[in-house]
Amino acid sequence: MLPALRSKAIATYAVAIVCVAATADAARPADTGSHAGHVQGSRPHILMILTDDYGWANAGWHRPEGYEEVQTPYMDALVKQGVELDRHYAYKFCSPTRSALQSGRNPIHVNVQNLDPYNHNPDDPVGGFSAIPRNMTGIAAKMASAGYATAMAGKWDAGMATPDHTPKGRGYESSLIYFHHQNDYWDMEAGNAACKLENITRPRDLWKSDADSEGVASDMANPLSECADSGLYSTNPDCVFEEYMFRDHLLDVIDHHDPDTPLFMFWAPHSVHSPLEVPKQYWDRFDFIDTPARRDYHALVTFMDEMIGNVTNALRDKGMWANTLVVFSSDNGGPIYYNGTGGANNFPLRGGKASNFEGGVRVNAWASGGVIPRSKVGSKLEGLITIWDWYATFCALAGVDPTDTRAAQAGLPPIDSIDMSGYLLGESNTSPRTQVELGSVEPLDKPQDLYGTKVPADVIVQGIIVDEGDQGLWKLVLGQLSMNGWTGPQWPNATTDWAAQNSWAECGVDTGCLFELRADPTEHNDLADSFPEQVWGCEAAYYACRRFFLTSLIATISAR
Image (tube, rainbow, N blue to C red; front, top):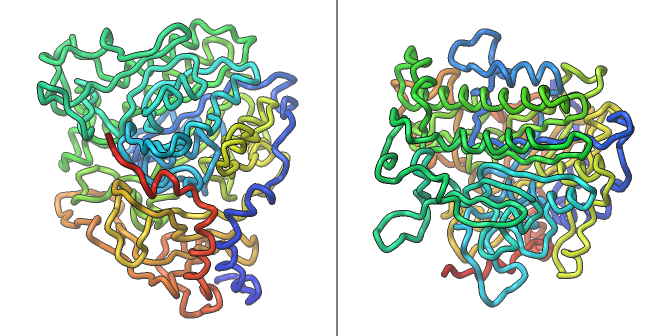
């Protein structure tokens, strides 16, 4: 049964869309102060894992025990030893989520587009770059200021137009990364890069930095003549799977690290983003699956799971686990477009990557490690958490003020991040976050930019989630939403014939679609007609809210 809905509360939701961007920072609880008591008097080591395009139904903890197709034993164990984050939200696709995590801001205040990372607008030296404006302070810089050693491996996708935009420029002392939305796992070519070299090849996207240097990791890249176009897997011993390089970079960091110094590592696996490539021994383990994309995807999920096991076991072997926090999240829901060729499945949620339905923005997430108190081990946290909340949370655990003074001096928006450490570690039974704004790009009624790659474009709020406790967990979305539908328990399959990218829900820009997510987590029942007060003034609300968005880049960007 649906909880009772108070008319006064209903009428305030649309207004909340107007004021949330202006008041989020002022309303946020103070984020300063140390939470060192949670880790026996010392600041914890932190490993943040942000995986790519990971479907809800492709996680073992979302499947019945023993489900053969989804094999994630290491992560399943880490969830049982930690806490499942059941309502963890991200942006609906890649770069905005990554920009949000690094900057501590809702994407509407930092980046809502998947532009090539080298784009920039020469008329705007502050915000005129892809992804994060150069004057925003990254989370690694915050952690370094608190005395942490910092390292990163994997996908960056948060800008590269200037040295300020690289991982080193954002505070990572060492890194091994690729910049673009994707590259090839075997030859490292950036397949979707807009630029080409003189020999008509794509740039090889592999970049390394340390305390003394920064540049293309040409000495590590596979031989192009022998490893290009390897396809699903390569049997050439000279071809090293890219994910092994990222794992080994982190293992080397751990091996040479002094445990007395707090360590912050950000790991962004390429997995399980396309192209669906995987070492052959993992692909062979799934020969019982007869749908190629589903087989490839599940093999890559299992590979990723084992890599996570390798790194977390290294922390144990180093004696660091008891004072470590591991946070895991996907950057968005799994891709279900193009007839299932992405391989992912978000069952039973509606939609997928590139959609503001739950399948696109409610993501797999958990936290584990020795700092999780015994009272919380094995629990499921059902309060709202966002990817940008980890900025203030990590700052609190490190004992550093999360305020971004440099951004304020440049006239940029403040952080939207809320400290979740008390909720995570058992000081509070409720999340301090009560709403999540879901961003997108204009227009709402006739969307032309599914993946946020066109310029100019305007930032909008397409929806909002409001947690009123016993009175309901309400979600209001407006306009047209892509990926309109539900996949089955086993998907894609031999009978799959659905171009989800062409399937749109018509929610309207005036009335919208309204869902109560606790009673209806799969968004089957639109309640907007039953509660018309909910959506009054939404069109005016969006335009009133527009002045709080970060638009200098989006409105006038030019590529060169």
